[in-house]
Each structure stands twice: as C-alpha cells, then as structure tokens.
Length: 195
Image: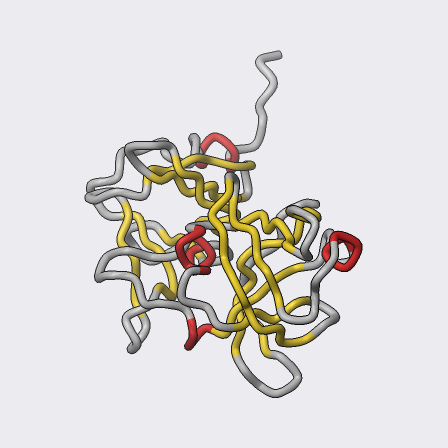
C-alpha cells in the first residue's frame, strides 16, 4: 500500500486525528493484528484507543512491539479471521492522546506533508517522507525538479513550531550547503542549442 500524507484530519465527531500506519494482517490466532507504523512504534504504547478506517474508535487491549511496527489486540477482535478483515485499513490516533515527545523530538508523521522553505522564506518543496538512516534522519523532499534527501540535523534545517510547540513547517538555514535539492537554477534555465 503506498504511503499517503499523514496530515491531521478530522473524524466525524471533530477530533483531530493523525494517521500512524496501516494494518498488515493477523498476528497469532486470537485476533491480534500487525500494524506497519509510519514513524516511531513507541507512540502506540500509551494509546488506550485507535481510530480504524471504516470501523471507528476501538479500544486497545494490548500492544506488542514487532518489526516494522506493532501488533495490536483490539476489543471485539478475538480470531485470526477477524484480524484479517483489518488488512490494508489505516489506523489513526487522536492528536491530543499521543504522548508528547521531549523538546526537539518530533514524530515522523508530524513532519510528513510540511512545506520546506529556503533561508529567504521561499517555499521550495514538501516533505514526502522521513527516513531513519541510523545516525540521522533524512527528509524525502519533493520539489519541482524531483526528489531530494536532506539531513534533518542542525545547522541545515530549522523546524518552525506552532504555539503548542509542534512542527508547522521547515526551513533551510543559511548554513545549508548549496545543491541539497539539486541545482535548481539549471532546471529554471531554458536549454540552448550550440548550433
């Protein structure tokens, strides 16, 4: 299933929710369901409920860490067949129920879909994804010339915050090396024939 933007959306009741991943299929024979997690699987530990696409809010009975995500035991699912019915469905959490990470730490889903501006404030792209590259995270940024990988580290990128201290956009700093997005000037110049 292709990744879509994990932008915050509203449920019919008006609660802001964020997509955390999607169900892969059953785990075990007692109704557990594997979830491919977009970002940090630890975000599921404190959740008492999740919003399942087409099913509504379901109580989380148990969370088991798995690679590449978690297995959830949800209220009302007690068989492998029941868990199979969740395959491919998106799973969300209420934004105000997600554990708040420490200062300077952001969930990957909070960064996906944000705009990236240059040091002068001109929008240059959109964050399509965030990759865990071990020692640093990489932003996958789509722009008019294609895609680029940009290290999410100081002093290259600044995370601009909302009043609630959560990410609202990203900016390249003046210290960012030229060419992080490729040579945008070459893409803007018309091709000239040497003839």
